[in-house]
Image 1 (cartoon, rainbow, N blue to C red):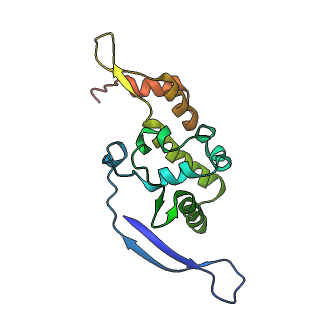
Image 2 (cartoon, rainbow, N blue to C red):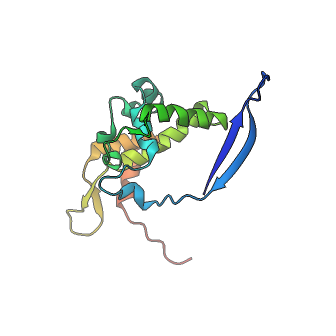
Image 3 (cartoon, rainbow, N blue to C red):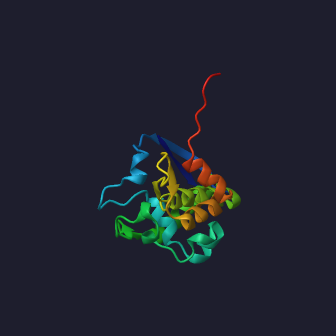
Length: 173
């Protein structure tokens, strides 16, 4: 479910924009789409918008984004299109940021939201293999990518690895 707000500054007034209308629409945003997008389809637009942003902006969000593009992240690797309806991903990113700012998502809140997008993107780069000891479970196949994920999340890599690879079973009350 999504909401759209129409915000404008009435003509002749110098004060801040005001909410003048809204609409509520239902959208299907299935969670499986993130990890299993169709071969030629792009994934969620915000992935491409953020990755198309200037490196100065990317560095403010997460230094791991600097110098990256859609081909740097498995979840964004599909779809080579860089414009929709004649508007580039960079232009759309600017429009997305302005829309978020219009509803109060600014400064640290905006950075936190965009870092959450980075977490999803980077999580797709972490790969797992079967545990070589034969006792079940899994191991991280690419610790460097796990380290990047830990960095963007602000948690120790060892804690993340434990959370991803060790099964905890709670029994009883």
